[in-house]
Image 1 (cartoon, helix red, strand yellow):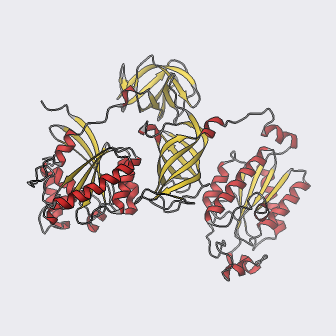
Image 2 (tube, helix red, strand yellow):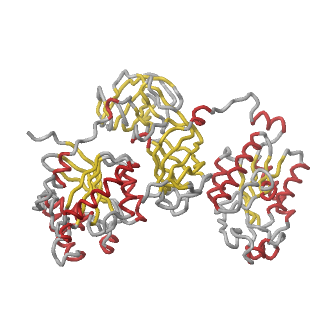
Image 3 (cartoon, helix red, strand yellow):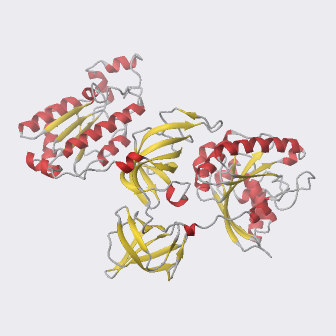
Length: 612
């Protein structure tokens, strides 16, 4: 009796030119999963793009992008759906080049199993190890090592066994519990869907391995978890909450806790795939209504009553960095976990992981495609689940706040105790009371510009003018702060990020005290200026760009710093050997080549008083 049809998601991965696309193309062809029009298109493409001398080039079935066909490599994740009499499959052909590691992570994040290819002539390569680490990171615990191109070494068993032994040792260090090994020739089809006919291998073919692999058990026995993706309110009489049930089961009458607010409710009605239902299971798209009106928004989580997830705003995570700009502690990002998005900062890089040796190395930053253990701090507590317990609720991405590109993918390891035990203490005297006492609207004036632009001069005049008007102020100057609060920081990019983070937090406290705080810093990075703005309520933060041309700043050189930087005596000097990112849309732009400092200070005061 044939086993009940199932649905398996798997990926193929490995180093470039190991034959991933050829293997999958051969698998689709030999398993009879291709239609006549696909076969005809393959024949045409093989004649135009193929590398097999006019014969069918099976790699072209997966290399769907024009750039891939021209270069002969896979640069995107190519998904294919196919089935046999025993099972249905979704397969992702992941790219092999290191610069496309992010695409590999995308495929691994939803896979049940992985087929990792190795060229028998090359053995294990750095990208092989990186892809294995990513599989382990994203919970792909079942893996088949496909040692390809065996026909080129005469199906040499000794060579195969040596590679298998080396890989099993690597898998053990990564904690990959279920690893198989298969000698294969993707080009000839040996051990893909039919046995290769080599006497020393009697195990399953690739297709047999895929068809008989145990499917992951559904998370139906876990407590119900429903991340709210959409709030539906077509009219005044209906309010529903839609999302994909991540874990457990739901039924009308079930009690749930709404996180993070902690409100209690019961499921009143339930729909699955648009139809009324008496029960929903993990993985199904559902719509629910509650028995009573509750304040629920996108990003909230319905958890089974009595089994809420712990809330924390600080946690440890393993991170795969994907951005060309290195990860620097203190820089702010958007964190997306489940359906929730919250501002986040990497507060510490505990260590970087060497993908070849698995050694833990000290690091002050993570470069593109590097992996490490980090600690994150969030702007608000969120329900957290370790990734080992919940792939749906323990995985996250970090998004660049300026470009909105995905900067990293990570998995929650555990919440930090300080995140669970440290809470906001609320007092009767708040910012509104302090501001009323001073008779003013608290603000943060953030001056930015090149060294020598005139920031400190204008900021000083602004403070004098405001004090003359009876305002309560404080001026935070870049040089002055480095004598005390930030005396431990240098001028590397990482130190500059931390320098600005600390100052922004101090400025936030001063605004909370009801003051008009004036910040005069070079603040060369747009991300950090955006981070500073995000700490304040709308209208509280004014970015003032002192726009002085570089040649004018250097001609002034009031502290002699440009001359020293040109002489090589000051490394990382903004405007000479370190970049300055000009504000694209400052709240106020000051041109010091057209107006006097006094006139510009007056313009700032008038803008501030008008905003108040």
